[in-house]
Amino acid sequence: MPTLTYPHWRDVPANTWRWPNFSAAEIACRGTGAIKINTEAMDKLQALRDRLGKPLIVRSAYRSPEHNRAVGGAPASKHMQATAFDIAMSNHDPVAFAEAARAVGFLGFGSYPRSGFMHIDLGPARSWGDPFPPRPVPFAPELPPAREVLSESRTLRGGGTAGAATVGAAGVEVIQDVLAETQSTIQPLVPYLDTLRWVLIVIALIGIAVTIHARIDDWKRGQR
Image 1 (cartoon, rainbow, N blue to C red):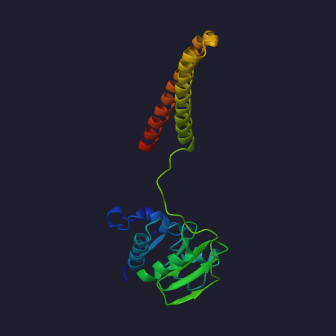
Image 2 (tube, rainbow, N blue to C red):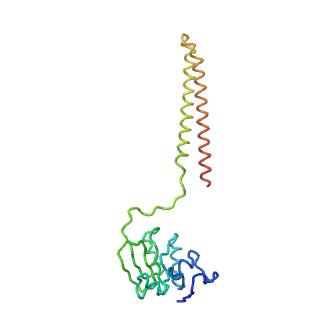
Image 3 (cartoon, rainbow, N blue to C red):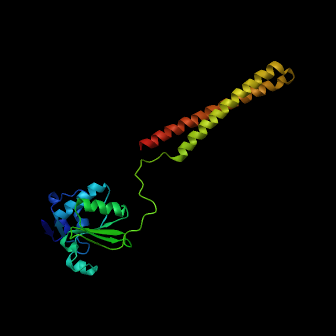
């Protein structure tokens, strides 16, 4: 179980750090900046990260003896051996997290629901603490951004306006023809109906333009 020790995390040679999802700074002691690297533990931590496919927020990793005493850690804490990690559960389901951690080789588990993190270490096999309460809503799958509702509303309104105005214009034209043929006594109204028909046609064209603009805007937003 190779272990590397450096007085400060900045002293770790960059070409020796092989865990892409973690930095030396987040593994180092929070109190002193010193770092002890247990390569087996780090390999398992990276395997856990790969298995879960989402970030692991490390609350505590290596602790120097003096920092361990300052935070009230156990006298023989695995943190001082660099074989333990406290991971926040804010972006994980605790049950799924524990199953994945066991699968990659972690053996010790401590649950701290009030503080929102889970302790994992290389063993011996044991567990302690209260279980996390069930989440009222499970984690939802990550989905691509949906179209903006306002854009869809503009499309709907523009299309509806165009359709209504087109139907209205056609109706006016029919009424105009009927009046022209059968109601000679109200012939003076026909020119006004002709004007109304053209007004409705203009409204229809405006509605079509709004619809086209909204759809182009939707497409542009989808490309961002």
